Length: 264
Ligand SMILES: NC(=O)c1ccc[n+]([C@@H]2O[C@H](COP(=O)([O-])OP(=O)(O)OC[C@H]3O[C@@H](n4cnc5c(N)ncnc54)[C@H](OP(=O)(O)O)[C@@H]3O)[C@@H](O)[C@H]2O)c1
Image 1: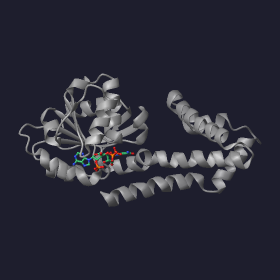
Image 2: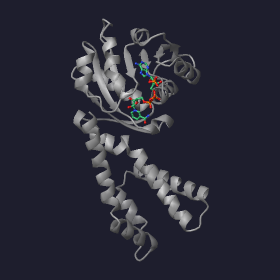
Image 3: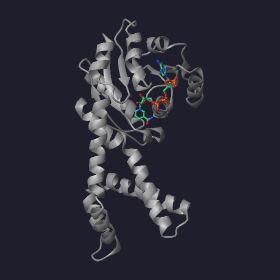
Image 4: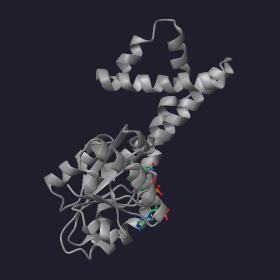
């Protein structure tokens, strides 16, 4: 596979680090470009061996698969410039909100795939979903799965469900940070030093999530295992129910999904 990455900011660089660490393709087969020369230099320093191209077109010309890692507003104009390339490329956009229809209109003869990643991809713990454009092949889908699989988990959905994905995993890290902070604040209110409370809270979230993923057990089953009759946990859970914790989470996801639909 030869790969171009147009836009070497946080997400673009994280993807390249995952791709080279997993040896999906050698660094020498990767071509990068960015509007900011310093961003290209930083990417080249953190992923040794990749080629810094002088322009987006030069990078895309050298590759069969093109990652579009610029901000959403820049995606369609960027794709339009790629029409100058005569042979069909696979264009993979990670931009929030830019629809397959908008991309296909700009892409001409190129194939497009739309991805919703999340920031834990920066440390190889991402949760991503993707939807394929009408011209994308099964091989294209396999390619995107290999690329995203290098920085976390990946699942395919129908495009309308990408808004739900945005609500759950795209925006989800921010809800979890809020929960971690609130959990720690509770500990501080009960006398724990702030740094200890934060470490305990963050590790509790990481450990509980790992248990769900590794055991495959339903969260309700795991919750029942730590909820003894008349104990501390059921008292806390009753408070969460009374304060509307669960419905607040559900509504938060639905509000984010609605907002994603508006932006799209
Ligand atoms: N970070 C996240 O949490 C996250 C999560 C999900 C999806 N995404 C998506 O990932 C994409 C990139 O996000 P990011 O956080 O990596 O952004 P970022 O750090 O700002 O990186 C984007 C880079 O692309 C450059 N750029 C802009 N227009 C360009 C063009 N036409 N050609 C080449 N380079 C160009 C930017 O330069 P300028 O600064 O000059 O514009 C910047 O250096 C966005 O579309 C975002 O929606 C990000």
